[in-house]
Length: 354
Image 1 (cartoon, one colour):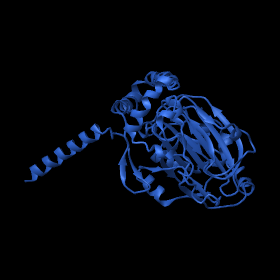
Image 2 (cartoon, helix red, strand yellow; image 1 turned 135 degrees about the horizontal axis):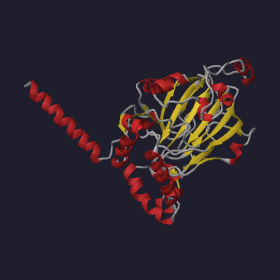
Image 3 (cartoon, rainbow, N blue to C red; image 1 turned 120 degrees about the vertical axis):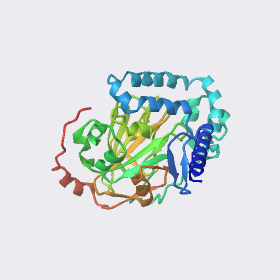
Image 4 (cartoon, rainbow, N blue to C red; image 1 turned 45 degrees about the vertical axis):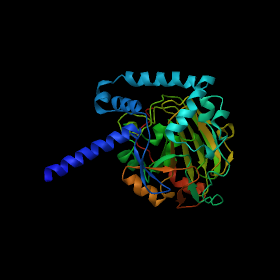
């Protein structure tokens, strides 16, 4: 009786795995914030197998020259160019069907209105489809993209639990330890966008642009399998950084990071200029061509992330969120100058190695 019980369990598990493969639900398990239910992302099976091949301890040990990942980068650039051609529009219908995209959330909603796959990829939300949580309250930060997110109160926890790259620090992320000083041991929200997502991104807070910086780099995949390897994904990929100065949260760092199948990381022209006012929920820029990632960093002890996000993140699970959903509250809503007087004396260990 006991043996048959285990046999039945094994058969049920095999059938369950087979069903996941048949429906292409071989991506990561996440939690839907609206329902609280666990769901599994759809992902092409060959893509999953390719990631397992490229990002594992054996490959990391053998491929010290990163030739395999260089091949992936060159392939990304080549594929990206195809998405801007009229012929690429033929992919849209099957793409929408495979991922179950609700086109009623977008404008235009008719897939035939898009001339190329690139046009479809950076589609816009329909007005009102993504309300901004407490839009007139600057003490509340919001989610920046339709995406999956994990949040951690400190950079150390982020490194220990989620981003395993050997050289991940905020200093390496912005390629400047002096600029990174405000976020030493600050809180981090890591957003991951999949190819099927809306790929425009929005400000998490209300404030004023202090500085903007563009950093060239690679286009490695930002799948959790890659982020939790020892490869320095986020600090090697192409990225754009914006510092937003606020009264409620101090200085907030927004970093848009390109990834596999992303041709460009674009920041709106106005947001590239110091002194520009931004309101939470305002569009900051967009990605093109594929999966990508966003890091939002807050000064130490200046934000309290929502408890449901923290709880899921502690279990190493990402939560599905939408633009404008609540991210957290300001814990010290004071003027930035008061906070930075003390920060100027903080010593940051190490030197920039990017």
